[in-house]
Structure formats: C-alpha cells, structure tokens
Amino acid sequence: MSEGRLIVLSGPSGCGKGTMIEQILKDGGYMVSVSATTRAPRSGETDGVNYHFLSREDFEQRIAENGLLEYAEYCGNFYGTPRREVEAALAGGKNVILEIEVQGALQVKERFPAAVLIFTIPPSIDELRRRLHKRGTETEDVIEKRVARALDELPIAKQYDYIILNDALEDAVHDFFTVMRAESLRADKVNLNF
Amino acid sequence: MSEGRLIVLSGPSGCGKGTMIEQILKDGGYMVSVSATTRAPRSGETDGVNYHFLSREDFEQRIAENGLLEYAEYCGNFYGTPRREVEAALAGGKNVILEIEVQGALQVKERFPAAVLIFTIPPSIDELRRRLHKRGTETEDVIEKRVARALDELPIAKQYDYIILNDALEDAVHDFFTVMRAESLRADKVNLNF
Image (cartoon, rainbow over all chains, first blue to last red; front, side):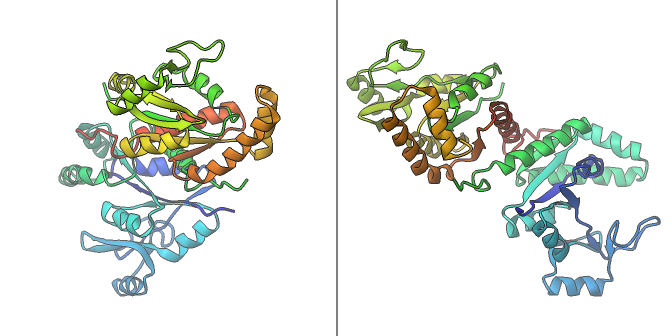
C-alpha cells in the first residue's frame, strides 16, 4: 500500500470549505484531521470530534515534545494539528486533509514538501459577504473583520500549490479530485519498475 | 485572452502518442507543432504537414538565428521546433503540443519553465514490443533497438512533470486533460483580482 497524501485546505471562512470536505469524505480514501485547541468548547461541540480540547499547559507540552505538525495562535488561543494521528493515517494509506489557517499551512509546506496546499476562494468579496450574512452566525462587525482578513490573506494564497474557486460546490469538489489525480501522475510519484 | 500552454509529449515510439494527440486535437483549444527536419521526406509525407523539410544548411541557419525552440541530432539528421510558429500560437491562446524526444524536451523545460512536460509509458516492455510488432512497420532488429532505447530513456522520464500510463487510450487522454485542468489551477496561474 502506498502512503497517503497530506492535503492542506485553507480559504476565507464563509467560502464553503466545510461543505467541500463533507463531499470529499464520501470518498473513503480521505479523512480529515481533528485539530487541537486551547479555546473552550462551544455548545454542541464534542471533544475528539470537533476538536481535541486541551489546556494551555497541555498544548505547550505538545509543542515542546514536537507533537504538533503545525500550530498557530489566533485570537488568544492555540490551534494545532496532532502529529501522531496524521502520520498513522498517512502510513495507513489515507489521504489526510488539514483544514487550517495560512500560518499553519506554510509551516506544513516547509516540513512536508510533498503536502498538497489548496486555497479556496469565493467568486467575489461581495459573494463572500453575502454568504457570511446568510450563515447568520456572526455580527455585522465580525463579518467585516472576516472580509478584511480574507483580503489580507489573498497574497498568501499565491504561496499555495493550487487555488480552487468555490462558486458551484460540485465544480469545486470536482476540481479538488482533479488536482489529486494530477498529483498522483507527477513524475516523482509514479512507480517506473518495468 | 490568456496565453496558451506549451506542452511536451514524449515517450517510447509504439506507446500511442500519435493516437493520443488525435483525440486531444478534437478539443479546439489545442494544436500540435510541426517539426523541422533535415531528413528526406518518406513517401506520403507532405512538407508543412508532417514536417517542415529543410536542407542542412537552412536548418543550421535557423539554429544560428535562434529560430528553434529546441533541436537535436538523431540518426544523423536534425529535428527541431520552429520558434515563431509556436510563439504565435501561444500568444493566440492555443495550447501547443510538441511531440519531441527527451533531449529536446529538457531544452524546452530549461527555456520555458512554464511548459508542461508529459512522458507517456506503455503498461510493460512486453506490451511495447507487442505494439511495435502489431504496427508491422519495423524489422525485428529495429523493434529491439526501440525497446532498448525505451528502457534507456525511462530514468529521464523522472525529469518530466507528469507520467501518464497509456494502457487504455481513453483513460490516457482523460489523464492528459486532468493534468491540464490541474495546471490551470496552480496558484501562480490563477488570477486573484478581486
């Protein structure tokens, strides 16, 4: 069995990463990594499903033990990817998706050059604003902060491997699998034992 | 209109590059470059269609004028790709396929880092031998030379961008378009003007 691929999926919140991942997981060859965080669980969130909820002390120990593939501090809380779980899944032939922020993504690229970094973009800033409003979970103020952050992060998207426009969900998911198929055909990945 | 992509397609003779290209050209966005050569036309070959047939003197002048994207000497004859035709087609938004040997391919990669280099391989050496026999145009001796050459060139395939297995033609053609779609999603190719 060949090793799975590590995949990073980033993009502004409100551009549909969650629904894309739901579709992708229908393919049994993929799984999504559960992040660790020091932020408090929100109502309805389950430890080990939405996040691994850790104390700040535990999180710092994980950092010290090199137990995280990447981590970042965001709004006063740590977020990171547990190394052992991901490495075990890759060794088992699964493709592992990390839904992480740009800071973490660039750490992953540096440490795992074979990782595939995908940045999803909305059709326009107006459409992003519309989707955030439609979701109805954030205040106007938070929405504008997210929009400003999206614009800030766009130049970093150029450091990713691929950019997928998420206009129609099915097209975006199709592009995701297209990228993964093409990646499997890259010359350094193909076995040439005749 | 965005500029077309330069595509190199190489692979052992007998592994179906010609039939792949026939299928690809059904997509009007692609064209194949007509090579220049100093070898004599074979019966049925037309100047400007199969090759641009040039005298050795004319060919050497093209080299001196930097009029060739790449060239190589093979079995005592020159083969090369006229630069002007290809550049005009790319500027016109066409994707241009060069069906060339490995020496020329590596020259193209050096001069046009944005070129997409694809190496096609047969399912096995036995299958390659079988296809060459089936074609019935070469003697046993020539077939064995081609097989030996294919084995020699395999390590060079690793310097290409992609390797496509040509077992069933339709799958190989599908993989070709998959690679081209994924290439269009590469972060340095996507326009991020919001």
